[in-house]
Image (tube, rainbow, N blue to C red; front, side, top):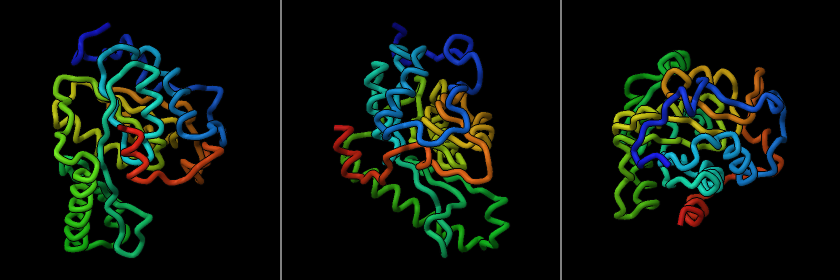
Length: 236
């Protein structure tokens, strides 16, 4: 077993930048639920067993995936809060993200295309920072954020549509001194993987899909939103 904090070497654990299951490409309904997806993802990530890497679940949907993943691989588990900065007229669409440490990342081409002003963006950042800080307090209380300096970190979510939130999380853990940043998701659009692969050491994804229409939920036979309370209960 590698010592805690040892670097995950690409040559041994990530021989390629993207590692997937070819038999699941471009298929929908491949997982029963998030827990089932986490177990299948753990099988794909077997080389990481016992490496001392830290699994950080992206709140809240990433938690039911990360719990069985960390358990199967014998790895420490914690959570990271990251939130989209949403459009003023559509809270379902984001043009940036804020991470748990205050890191902000803006999708500048999208921002320009929808005509957001600097004032709009600053208001969005401020509101999202406040939201993230509140969720961190609700999740952790007085418990400090986990130390990632010198460690390999696995960022786990239930899927990637654009990948922008995950890129912001990766930037935050890089800034905190992580030696290697690994993304683990059951499903993702291939464009999102290409977008994020330059920011991380490697990506593990069971179900890579292409095409104009993509929804994370389509990979799951059972799908529902995960509340903060449910995620907190799973983590405890």
